[in-house]
Amino acid sequence: MQETPLPVLVHVCVTCRREGDDPEAPRQGSRLRDALVGLLPDGMTLQPVECLGNCKRSCTVALSAQGSWTYVFGDLTAESGPDVVTGARLLAHSTDGLMPWRGRPEPFKRSMIARIPPIQPLKDAAE
Figure 1 (cartoon, rainbow, N blue to C red):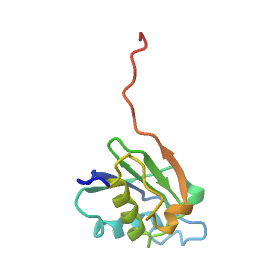
Figure 2 (figure 1 turned 135 degrees about the horizontal axis):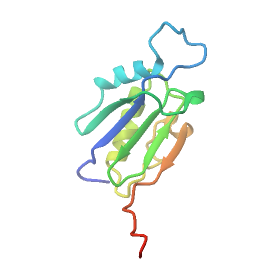
Figure 3 (figure 1 turned 90 degrees about the vertical axis):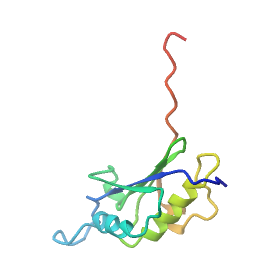
Figure 4 (figure 1 turned 135 degrees about the vertical axis):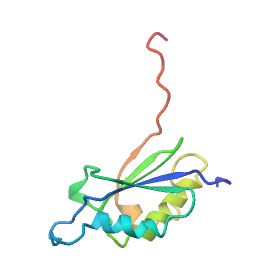
């Protein structure tokens, strides 16, 4: 377990809306962002985004940290804030850049959309 937690960036799609939601009501993603404002501990940064391109499985969140894999989760709700914090903490304390399966909240066990490897420096084409 990582002794000093890595800073985690939490992207929340604020345009996410579920089919059947009242078009006049605040969107699920925007409500999730609002809920996370009071939940994220120090070392976690909330970054609202206009679209994560996962409309069919909204509400969507992406978690990333320097040198770690980026995780994209869908099928969340405005009430998923505590689960997002738990997942972000797991990533923050990871020693290998991977979010461990053990300890993931249930929505994060069944709603992963993608796992994206960390960015590596590009090798010179001449090599």
